[in-house]
Length: 281
Image (cartoon, rainbow, N blue to C red; front, side, top):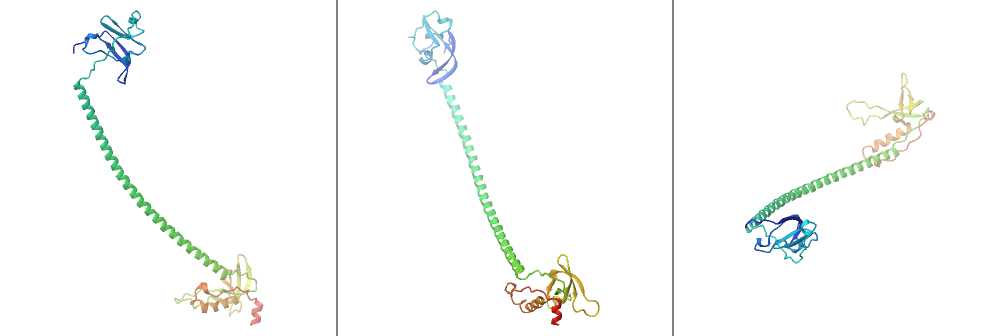
């Protein structure tokens, strides 16, 4: 293709076959410079700020405000022109080849991404399975702990019930006065044999003094030779003399044969007075 000498250049926004281009350089050439009709279609020439005119054998295209078009009439019937395509068949083939290579590369990247997503899904499924197993294990541990707590609560309730039964039926706080006849708990003799046959209390004793904090001074009622036995003990170590005798009778018949919960109810009697004891004798 021979070199062309343009008659001028302008820049404008153009649209060809619905494709828009901004600030595009346009070169004007003579009509006989090419074997095809010229340059740009009607869409661009219809722009209000673009003007063209033919002087002799030349077509002049430019802005309406340019000095060139102020003194020349504008011929609106000039044949539309078109631009020669710059791409050759070879360039189109190269472009298509480049596009095809780009698409293949894109497809390869998508396949790699898909494989990576599948691997992540497999890992996620494994994590979900492990999570379910750990959750089930934790639930079983919690159920086991709850069961142990329920058992401990049941045992505690049973102990509370037993203690309340004992406090209600077996334990009665004795308020003693001076002159009451009592028995005091005896420490067992450690002889190596069973202490069950040894007497648990000794007496009779008489309360000789009421002291603070539920303590009492007691003395042996019928002293043997020598000085009488005297000591200070807490009320928990004392029993009324008659109550102690009845307890001994109960223990001899029921202590080993019946459960504690089935024994007869014991009553706390008022202690004997010193005078009553002496009258009985």
